[in-house]
Amino acid sequence: MGTAVLSTGDKILNVMKDMDMGISGLAAISGVREDTLLDILAGIREADTSTLCQIADALGVCMRELCPDQERYTVPVEKNTLAKLIVVSEINGVELDALIASILEKGIEENGFYD
Image (cartoon, rainbow, N blue to C red):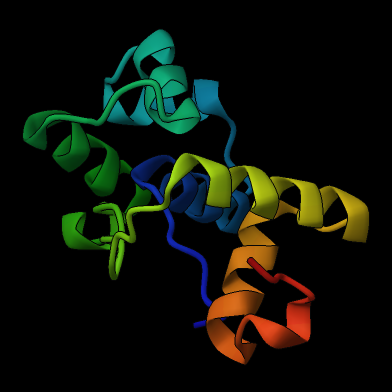
């Protein structure tokens, strides 16, 4: 459970870092406009298949490698429970996502979260 769920933008950024490539370089090689790339990298929008294919070709990777990871599950959380989680995360000085991951891994009692 320790692995993060990566978006398309995260995956493109990781490949760009490995290649020491900037946004303008990727735009030039892929033919995708810089503002479009910025939106995709920031997660403002998902790339359509054609754009993703252009980016993948420019980076020399398979298009599937750039597709976003799927969440493994979604858990509905009541508003008051979420509020308690936020307070506990602030008291303990941890990010909310890290606290939730810890709770799911270790259980509720170890994290001092009681109803």
